[in-house]
Length: 393
Image (cartoon, rainbow, N blue to C red; front, side, top):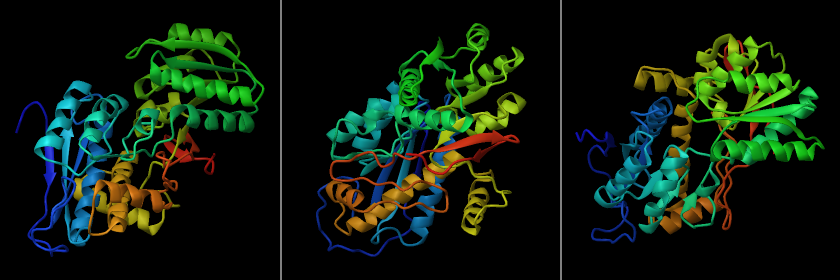
């Protein structure tokens, strides 16, 4: 195995019944008489490995289930996952391998904005569909291209919806923000300002931090001194925990709201008492096997995941499974003569419904490449995430 990257291949076991005549030609790479080759770029060794590994596992589970049921129009799926280490340079090398050596048909669910945006042009140049990257960056659906499709609501839109709901439900009047000093943080800031403008309010205080910061004392002192009802966090995992712990030590008793990037299983699990009560935005909920409200289908899915991988499923496991399932439904609808164009047309024509995993409905169209504009509000209660609103839009 090349030490610079890991990859996993899931191939067809044995032959599959032919659905097209021998010698038939396919217009696009990655599709043969008995196989569809899929690629994905995950972080399996870097700072986002706690996301990348379960995303990969969720994808594997769905691929194995589909292959066990005969594949798609007689074709088995072969999934190849490359490790980026969350480094755009490594991601480019991984994409080049997937596109030119493995000759994938579709790129699925690549993790992170820096990865998806660095590799997207390479994918589209090869007439390969770039589907459902795990990032909320608008560059994954804008500008329009017929072969790129996104699922995640952009940070400005989801933050606006969440802050609007927080203002309505908590009657907050004095709102401030702590955000990462980069494009991600600015997108959270934009969404916050839009929600405040809608409510006839102004941002009382703002402060930033550099990526990787661990000390938030000066920022939280500044926000506490502003006498805020609500602090918006443009933070991710470690920063969310550190900022809230610092604010509580300083005596801040108001509410906290985080973007989609703060809605992480690790925040609730590792944050302890410091993050209790945090609100954040989500599209699909984090599952818990012992939740009395679970459906039978959800529990059976979680049991199958644990039996396969010897660990509990989480939000990212769900994400990986759904990504492959959306592809499979569209490929099935596209029919035996599968091409990038026929797959795109199938995605445009057939919405992906809400399901037992709690996902929103995904709807694309001839001129619409973002599949979702609905989010929900969740809160950490008793050390776990609990959904506390219906879909907002």
